[in-house]
Length: 134
Image (cartoon, rainbow, N blue to C red; front, side, top):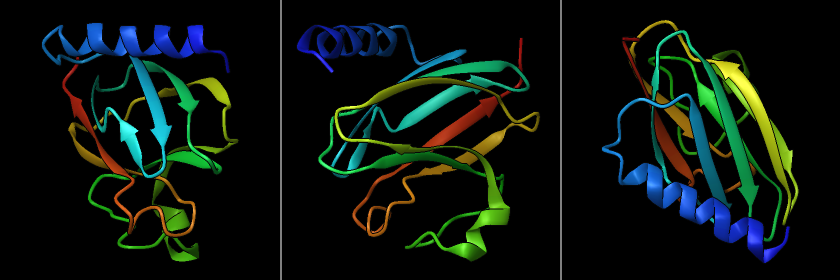
């Protein structure tokens, strides 16, 4: 990824952060070792969400949304698979991707994790807050 795209993503993130943190149908996520920036997202329930992800880390990262009321704990393993709501996996170092998913219909707080070994324990977690669509 080139520097211009990285700067553009950062500017968009700063702009979105200054807009009051209301629900959005577009998420801009930058991954590094070991964090999501930002790490809190608010989306409207049941809406189609576009997620733009940039991996500025040195290893493969991924973005996993757990189902409401579930948590991956300190490690993500096979027992957590049934609790995954949505995931974008295996974004290589210096890679980026754009995907879409439908936000959960049920408002609440959903855990976001990177399932790469050791990343949850190192703090690579976030929160997706789903609010009633207006």
